[in-house]
Length: 125
Image (cartoon, rainbow, N blue to C red; front, side, top):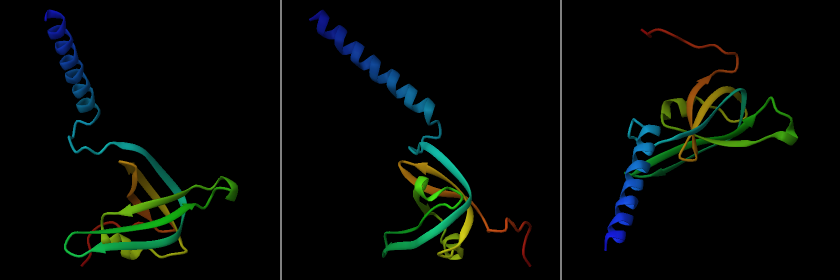
């Protein structure tokens, strides 16, 4: 009986230790781990799509690639938008400066700049 209790305590201890490591890796507690991030000075938008489930959710995304890479090395990325105002400004078949991160195996937009690099600051009237 003592051996069985010993193994149960060891198992519980391992679970507690694993839980601590998981918490330390993600202290915000938002269950969203950033896996990688990318920044492209010439992100070419090939496709622009959206999906709406009325009353539930809306997804907006673009598919594109790093326009500065050679065609044989090209990787395609599906980047999701959280803000419809930003999504509405994106045009298909144009290039932008994109910065995006993967969260739970999905890419989400972090920053975007226009092709000529201009960025407005301050408040409008």
